[in-house]
Image 1 (cartoon, rainbow, N blue to C red):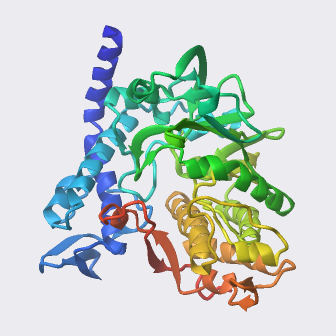
Image 2: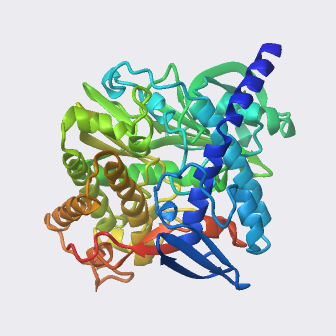
Length: 532
């Protein structure tokens, strides 16, 4: 124990040296959010001479560099907004309503954990391209040091101490021992292919939550596992074909990461349906084959639940990585990992990589949307298989944010499954927003920004390739019309995709609202506008 404490103190001392950069990084995300989101108390915005000014409801004007507010912009050293270099201090100075103090505390936690994450990274080893070493998926997920690229709460883990973050967070590369508990059979609910009455428990949950349920009995079985980028989902070291999603009552980014009763019910049903629809379109779906939950007072307990999910099965010479890892630093060079893919598969031609990735992703995703399946295909949920740097296969996982249209499915001759929660909707705007905000406004926009920084690539050239890939999808044997509730034609999804604005999730405005988990969106100028 003394050695562990000494190591933690040493890490924290190193993290102190990372605090300035972490503050700037979180401040940049916050500044970007204030510049574009419907934040209460911000009543006007103007840009002049490279400076962005926000007009507050009380008449004050907040000024900072306009470039630092752009999506995916790296934070310059010493970034200051309105004279503040600390995001929580800035937020507290603005008077943005009763929820601002909650958000300020979350920002402080995000900064501290980001500094700890950066301090834990070894320097680049310079031993040749990292992707050429064929790292496994968990290793690549753990390379994502800075977390969510747009959310100021990129590293928030409220409820975990610094020592616990170090023991369990993927960027610290631990092996986590999951514990198996026996559940009385009459208190066990299972779905999908079914699970025996054994609950796999994350050690944080075991230490902080399980004392409330003394009738759960430890079996003594331990499952060593590597945490994936979501922390509470892990890859068992001895079982390469499955991943385990556990419940952890800790706020990570914006939500406490439990496993809801709706997720236990929906996951196996929805993932099986989507897998069947996606396979002929060229998208590999990682199904949630089974789920289980402990019944407390007759109801599934969201703190005592688990999901078993398929893991990717890479082909020969294939490296599988989440799309979020493309912008993550290579352990070999420190440059974004996408540069290794470009150098290996497209020497001197980053646009070749961008075009191939867009053609791999957009046709299946847009065709699924037409059928009535809107996937939340952001960089954590969507993976790519690379062979010699070239994208050869796309994967999708996680179904809590999916939206299904019963009307569109019915028009395609498909019966919608019985769903719990908010997954079912025939609102065409909601369906389109769910997909477009994730894959276009986040994944492809971050790729365009990264290639511009690394190669000087014109983002306009990237967006021309994206438009071509979308056009190929819409011209490949199906109508540009979608199906409205009740049947009959409706304006096509293509009209929205190539329209003047593109949605992005307003995550900071959500944290300042009375319903912080209800989706809010904000429009951005659409780089695809007019390219149809």
